[in-house]
Length: 552
Image 1 (cartoon, rainbow, N blue to C red):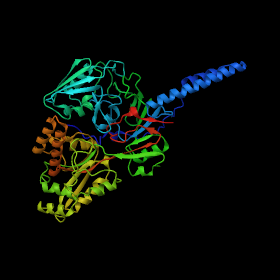
Image 2: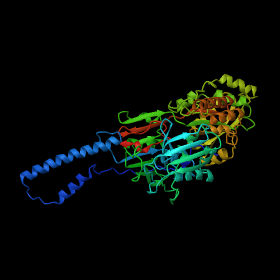
Image 3: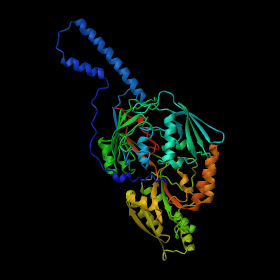
Image 4: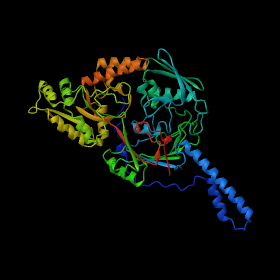
């Protein structure tokens, strides 16, 4: 059973850390530094005029060469004509508990490690589209059951120097299946992986799966060194452009450019990346303003309004986060579809979104705008208190004879959402009790045991519609028609056909009202205008640190 990745729980372990990062004082031209040191120690010999002139000419040539070299290096990071800083500091809200990406849940660990420290067979861009990764190309059989991947053959290796080839790829994927590492359930249709030769890997499926390529950009596609020995909780041996220099889940992570990195397309633009974990919104914004961090992702949308537009870039974009108000479909009170529908009609989504700074977007269904199968379903249950009251009355409840329900959710999200829902639902005859709990309690009681009536959590994962086709997931939703439509979407070898089935399935779920989707969370990011290459979209799940640079 996959766990929700929006709240993570990892945030509970983080503490604000006020240590300022040292500023770089190193020159961009080491030869000039060396020349300065040697000249400082030399005694004046009173050289002749011709010698002085010759030295002057050499110095001018050296300066011209240094400028040309510096420009060439800066061009690599799309910062032509400027000098790059050797360190970028990024403030994130959530921290991974450990570095063990094969076992540790949560998207916080994926955000910082995938594509930066560990690489997958395929990669994903900031538009949520599949791109080449360790494999430069691939072929799919007509029946959709055989995938052949052609690896890059330019001496791929891990950060410890070990060679990376098809054996490592096949071993990593087979280990995922055999030991049921995290997200192994995403590739249930995968039968086996095998190395055809050093540069070719073949995956065989029991049944077609239109999601396979996308899943291979994440944990199921990660490639590990089968010969390496290390503590996966505190260390990492990957093939990516960065290595982990140090890690403390309570404060920060320091990444250093991998000197053995095999690739050229993802060559690091910055030598060092410091990631600070800042859980307090006000403290985070103060850290940005003081220069302790160069980037905040995310930043509180309301607090971001205080940032000077001439100094900071602030933007928000759709992501895969879905704030889901789930109804326990096995609960006696909520088995009545009229009650579930009434709740949906009674929720004023515009009011909720406005209270959060008017940044998020109305969703209306289980598929976010960045995923295949998305369709605007907000018209299915528009805000209509009168309609909601009618349905409640049919079900036997009124404001004088209210239905008592309990909303259980993690205190990570604060009290405002609960208070708003309590107020809105009171208008239609629902007496809502709010039970704020620790995230660990929520994970055990709600997510694991399914013991709740209503619950709320931010589901951050992309391509996670399968949860609505899994009756033993904590939603306890068992829609046979939805399961059939989703099966057709997976089996379709044509992308458009698959998307159409997904749209039908998503609409069927929304009409059945096993939940309400309060809003799609738009991630607001803010960064100093000196920062170049920070992704404006999907930075919560895809964070290509290698392309980020800061100009001095």
